[in-house]
Structures are given as structure tokens and as C-alpha cells.
Image (cartoon, rainbow, N blue to C red; front, side):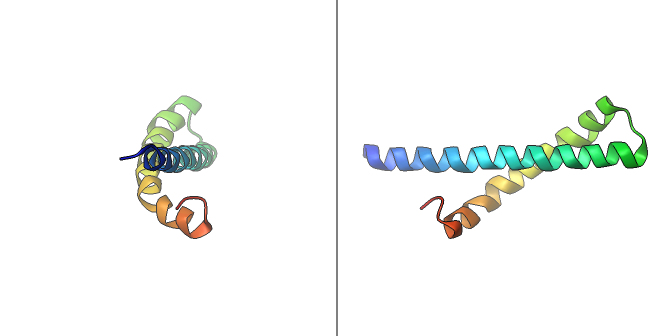
Length: 77
């Protein structure tokens, strides 16, 4: 594999990974905050038992689904 293909693969991995981590973190934080308000939970309990598992699940889902949408938007090839 030549260096242009290596750089293109690294760029794709970086873009998809950073967008997946960022969007998963935002959605998990919002969901944990809403559950904290609705169910009157402690902050640590909401983040540990709702935020972190939701973050992991959303991260896996975003890594699987984002490349198709990012290609359609023209961010990756």
C-alpha cells in the first residue's frame, strides 16, 4: 500500500472516529442529564449507570453508521 492510500485511510479513520466520539458524548450527556432531572438521581449515579453505557452503545452505532452518511455529505471518499 502506498503512502497516499495510507494517508487517506488514516484521514477517514480520524474523521469518523472523532465525529463518533463527539456525537456519542453529547447524546449520552444529554440523556444522562435528562434522566437525572426526571428521576431525581444523583449526578454520579446518572453519569456512571446511564451516561457511560449509553456512550459505549452510541459509539459502536455511530462507528457503524457514520461512514455512509459522511460519504454522502462529501466529508470522506
